[in-house]
Length: 294
Image (tube, rainbow, N blue to C red):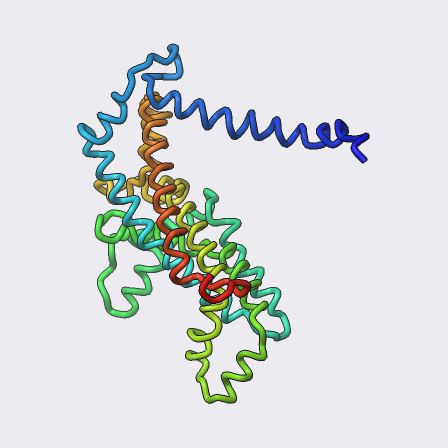
């Protein structure tokens, strides 16, 4: 039975080497570099906790970017998850050509981070763009979406929300697994469509809602392409996410030690928020296989 044990190890060797070389090694090295001063040209110089002391004590731009990142996540994650659930509910029907509409709604997830989409987004929200043309037709004043700090955040939040396809596909699979007999019984009892949605659909797909909430939160904190290509962090750093600050410190100012310290702060923030979400899940996430009082 165990004659080909070495052959099995040989099969998994590429995966193990890949994890060690491309996952674990960069992970450990980035943590080590966060305690150094490193400019990519000269050897790293160990400085201890200096990078972290500067982060939390002498860097107002870090505080600004951290606040912008948190505000961005608060706005973008519920919008994307909610919109994905709404579209999935609409597309959860049997009709001719429904697969075409599902593919069409998934397309923005593929194109959302491309240069062409960023150019299109800048055009849509520019001074003479499509959005302002519609506002003028309605008799309203045009808005400086990309130049006004009060509106610029909404442009990248809408771009993030528009890329809802992956979450929508997951929700759609979950909705298709909800037993139809529950809806039929609720309809016989006189429940409206809205009551069926909140009393049957939502409780049964809370594990999927929780999964999408975690995944979209991680994606929001990792977001780089949209803010960089659409607003470049402006105006007045109103869309200057922490990911942009990490990029500029590491690859524009060649302060890689400080950039890795920023990365670890971001990692710790995501880890803490994920831990809080997992802790809270026992109060609102329902698993069908769980027993009462467990």
